[in-house]
Every structure is written in C-alpha cells, then in structure tokens.
Length: 362
Image (cartoon, rainbow, N blue to C red; front, top):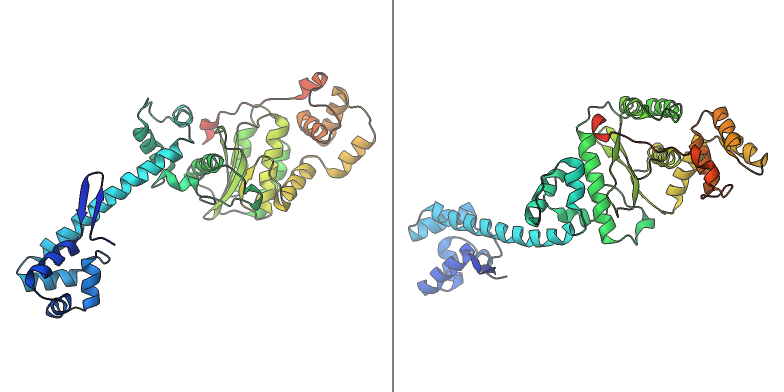
C-alpha cells in the first residue's frame, strides 16, 4: 500500500509520507529511528507505508522528538482522512449513477413530491438517496438489502432487484412513521376475518382495513408500482410491528384481494420477504393456498364447480352472495382455474377496478 493516493489530479499524503522523509534525512535506519521514537520497527514500518493510522500516542512522541506540536501531526492525519473520504465519495457517486440508471426519477417526483430537476442527475441522485434514507443508492443493488429474497428469485435482473429494494425501502420508511402496537397474531386473525367482509365495499374498504390491521400491529401500505420491479408485495418485521405492502398495479378486485391474502399468508407463516410475479417454491405455494382457501372456502368452491359446467354472470353473482365475496374474486378464481376464458366479455361487468387515494391514509 502506498503512503499517498492520487485521484482526479489530487494527491492525498498519509502522515507516513512525511515521517519517511524525516527518517531519510536523519541518516538513521528505520530500526534506529523506531528505537528513538520508543516504538517498534514494525509499527514504524506500517506507519511509513500508510498501512496504519497515526495514533495520538505516536503523534505525541513525534512532537517531543522533533519539537513540533501534537496538532501538526494529527492535522496531517485528519487532512488525509478527509481527502480519502472525498475520493471514496466520488467513486461511490460514480457507482450510484449506474444504479440510478435503473430507477425512474419521474416516479419519485410524481408520487412523492421530489423536486423537478431536469437533466441534473447528480442532484436527482441526492434527492432520491435522502428520500429513501440510505447512505448510497448502491445498497439497492444488494440482494436481501431490506428483506429476504427467496431462492426462486436467483435469476432476477439487477434492475428488478434495485427497483424492488427501492419500493420496500419506501414502504418501510412509511410504516416506521406509523404508531402501532406490538404485532398480535390473534388480533390479526380477527382483522383478517373482518377484511373478508369488506370485499364488496369498493369505495371505503381501505381506511377500515388499514385501521383494523394497524390495531393488530400490522401497517398496511399500498404503493404506486415502480415499473419493472416485478414485485407483487412484501412483508417485513419492523421492531415489534409488521409492514405489509402491495403495489397498485393489481387493483382489480380479484387480483388485489388475492395478492393481499397471499402476503397475509406469509405473515401468518412467519415467512417475511418479497413476493415477485411468477415466483415458485413451497413458501409461495403455501401462501397461494392460504389465499385461495380463505377468500373462497375450499369445500364450497369444489361443490360450486362440480355442480356447474358453464358459469354466467348470474350464477357467479349468486355464489358470491352465498359466500359474501365480491363477484370479481370468484370470477378471477374461475379464470385462473381455466373454468372460464379471460377474454369472455360477457363476464366483464363482474370486474371492478379500485381507486385508492394512497396519500390520504399514509
């Protein structure tokens, strides 16, 4: 290791650089100089090579030996450290620019009020970094930065990992601001039962659901989708409470409720992490089964599909009334199971698209 570093036409000199000059000018060997300094030859050698920081003790001994002030030597170390930190910061910014290329500043500007900074990439990076509350955007490129990435996501692109981590970081920051009691599994199960009664309350379900979950120690966050994240939802323990996040790209009644109950299944199983689209594995399969059987009781569904060969609007509505669910949930299940076609326009009246005013409750 050198006792000086060059970066972008600037040189940072380690105190060892100056100590070497003094040793050379003294005519002494390093070993003899070390003895006079009352330190070991090894310590002096490490210091001269820039492999060891100058300690207060050695600075004091140098000042006594050479007639300089202690601060002279400590200031040399501080100046070196400051320049190294500056060099590292510039290198980090270069890495952040690569990470930032995977993010869309417009997403943060439009949805979270970040200032309009056209063509000022470094300032945009600074604003996003501060908004996400991270020291560097480079951490977003790390798997498991915020929550568990399951084994079935090994082939995720770097871009998707970065975007998914950004969304989880936003959700976690929002959830941390919410006052909620300690997670209580029994109370959460009661809140889940209540949630099932809200599937047809298209206009007002979210604040009711948000508060019921919060009282059980679960903070429910809905975020605008960051295109390319491939994320459906995420769960994370935050101290004594739990964050449950879904995005708004699945706000049709069937897909929204299925995604929500899929994440609920993960929480009940103590399996926290990110759920990506088309993800496989036993943990995902278990969460899927929980969502399916909770939203539509298994025995009743089997009886329904075994008793009918064709499913029209009235038949689906009648069954939905029987189980007290939004008809769109039943339609989505039938489509997913191949019982009706996705492009059957005669059933389109059963689909409902939610419009959630996210900022109003978060």
